[in-house]
Every structure is written in structure tokens, then in C-alpha cells.
Length: 197
Image (tube, rainbow, N blue to C red):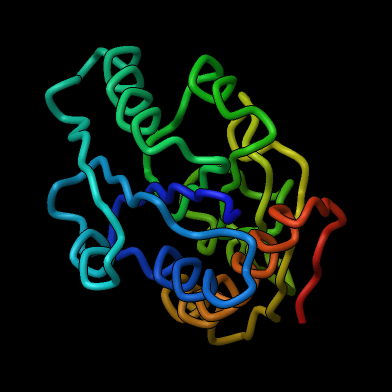
């Protein structure tokens, strides 16, 4: 019996596509829903083209009412009955109350080598700090932002001519490799961190 995976996105959904494409054959998971907070998210059409059910809970009508927004998200997720929730470029901060519903069953990918550079603008912060390397991290989601147990990391050197955009462009393919590997390991019951390359 395959485990059901709901994927939350806010944009183009490139990590969602990588996750969904990996869930074939003997993979223990199957995508059951792609859910976005933005009706214009490009990933929704990609999910539909792959035959994955989609839903939208637009965050804008809930301005100032995070609890209401999260309740609407939880309602949609409850209907899909996921065994695991994967955040893939979902650009809304979730509260501890939300996270508790899927405690131990929610993953996120973050574009830095956590615990460095939680939050936004990670590539420019790494360059400004004079770091020699950057990368991405898959972690379990907890109530603290970008703070759960690390389940995988991939690293690239920061080159002298790097800009935030060029660095992001080199890290993104590693995100697409790392996240599916970690997802499979977690669904198979493993929690030991994966390191690339």
C-alpha cells in the first residue's frame, strides 16, 4: 500500500515536479495532492499535467488571520488524507499549531546549509558573509522556522564571481536530487541524513 504524499507549493513547483517524478515504480509513496496558497502558481498546471489532484487556498483573503488560513489548509489536507506533507517552495510561515497536526510527518527544503541562514535571501547572505560554500538542506518541519532535524544536505563551492542568482542556479539541480532521496528514505522509515555530492 503506497503512502500518500501532499506537496505544498507557492511558485513554479520545480521541486514538486522532482518529487512527483520520483514516486513511481517501487517507490513507497505516491503524490495525492498539490496544494498552493497562490492561484497563479505555475506548479499547479504542471501537477495537473502529471495527473495529480490540485487545490488552492489563497492566503490573501485571510490577511491578518493566520489561524483562519491554516484552518482552511488543514481542511483541504484532511480531505486528501496524506501520510506525509512535503513543503516545496511554500512561502508561508506555518505556526506550531499547524505543524503539530503533521508532527514528524512534514518535510521542507531550504536553500542554505542549515543551521546557517534561516529565512529569506540565503544566497546573498552567504556571499556577503564570505562563505566558501553554500547549498540546500532537507529537514523535518518543527514549530521553529527552518529548525527541525536535518535529514539531508547538498553543497556547492561559492565562486569568486558568484551572484545570488548564479549561486541559486547551481544549487537548484542539487535540490532536485536531494529532496527525492530524502523523501524516499523517510517513507521507508530511515532518518539518517543524506549528504551530496
